[in-house]
Amino acid sequence: MASINKVILIGNLGRDPETRYTADGGTAICNIVIATSRRYKDSQGTLQEETEWHRVVFFGRQAEVAQTYLRKGNPVYIEGRLRTRRYTDKEGIERYQTEIICETLQLLGGRSQSAQPQADDGFETPRRNPAPRPAAPVHQSPAPMSATALDDEDIPF
Image 1 (cartoon, rainbow, N blue to C red):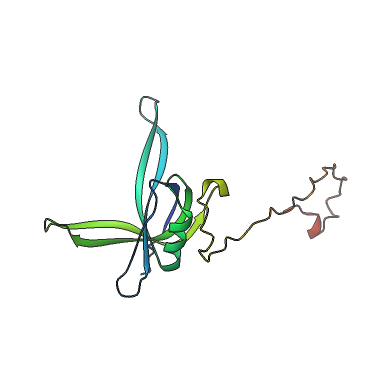
Image 2 (image 1 turned 135 degrees about the vertical axis):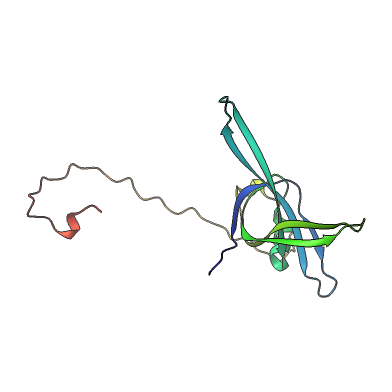
């Protein structure tokens, strides 16, 4: 049987990214925390908000990009997979931590909401020009048609 491990989040960073490097090859590992919120009405009809915090991990070049461009409060889109890892804390107690391994990162919001990169970081942000908008369609009343004069091109769907 097939299985799927896929996570998609849109949320805001709860703090600035934290990056460290592996001892063997210097691979960058960046950790962030993203907040997502849900609004609902409780049984009395009062509007409530519930916030969930998610740990996200980036590796390699993506970790370096996250460290350079992400800041606390930035909106971000993340796609990845869940991973639960086991570790022993300083007191010798075995603990588990579930995190999202990021596979796709997309910065949301405008340039004013993201950090400005260093001039020599070697990463060039693609500039997007807005696509030209087509002219608004002119609505005309359709000419009456007989039931026998319909072609496939005359059907609007």
